[in-house]
Image (cartoon, rainbow, N blue to C red; front, side):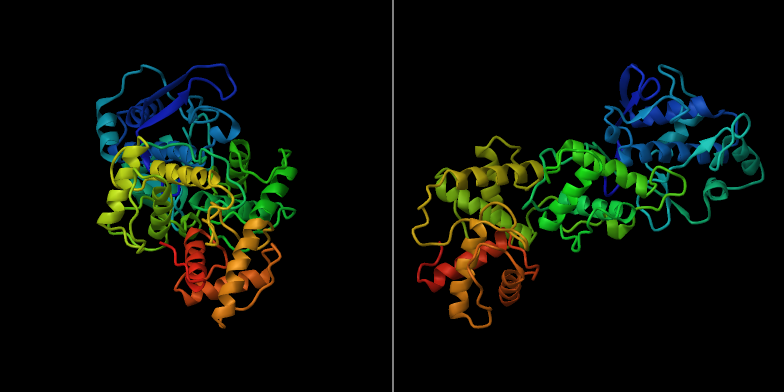
Length: 453
């Protein structure tokens, strides 16, 4: 799901019904809208009628892209040219000049239901040979002749609770699938989107367990919800969200929310919000910056071509230079900004670095962050290491409750983590990501008389 809808630079059109063995063509989005408008409506209509219809055509197309209606069904296109399913597109047709001018003015606008973020599914029909619950194309002519504005015409058909979003940014739009499978211990905005969608589906399919905390951390609860979803919808039950599972979840989320219907339940701003930032750059501060600094320092410790620098949670000159050096060394676009490509490479190199270390490399120091989030319900040796560090810290800092070192991340361990996080000014989530692990490890080493460098 595209959280903040944008205007695509291009759109891929299937020249036939969805399942037909027809050609796909990719055309500029504005040219697509001009073509459809020139095929669907008459240039001699009043300008306000033309504008209302073009708003509807734009919003319809953007809804198909936003919901990934066809990709979530296994197709490799955004929309068809068949009016039984979508809207008319005629290859190589000429467009009308006045329609072209209007599209150039308003192509970066679309219709939304108030309180929702997704482009409204602006269903329409011609109003003569076919009728529907949405806009009547010929009916807009009558309303325009009565003096109604384009917005008032749209309200007449779609309700008074609509808005027109204007000046929407134009951007390349990739598929929503993260590109690599999501699994236990992953964290980020993609996990947050997954959790929101699974919980929405669970309201209609109660066999799927609800996820109690939508925090963007792929915890045991999330894994259990994924497994049950896969079982209910006849997918391999792995608990891992690969492309097939991701798009199946997307398809049923769109279905239960009726996002591709006129009476959509809508995606609220809260549902579309995500816990993590996007690009991390100079001037930023906080947990995401600390995470980047930690990864860069661990990698640099074992790679003399890179530089170690202080971890201070502020993206300043030292961090920017370290990012640039990292990007140069690994053949990335050298910007000094941690974009998605840099972040993915940073995580990959960190995990590879950690995996290549000998078992006894730490020599009594806390081990490096294991590369995934630890949270309640997990049971393994990494949890045991975490508990060892926390237990030792608790021997020296009485505010932190003493816990059993058994390798099981239960409520007591989560409580000890939250207490530690609160004492050290971290968000008390009870889950252990790279920043919390770093602080716990640093305190453990310090109390043992071997502070981390």
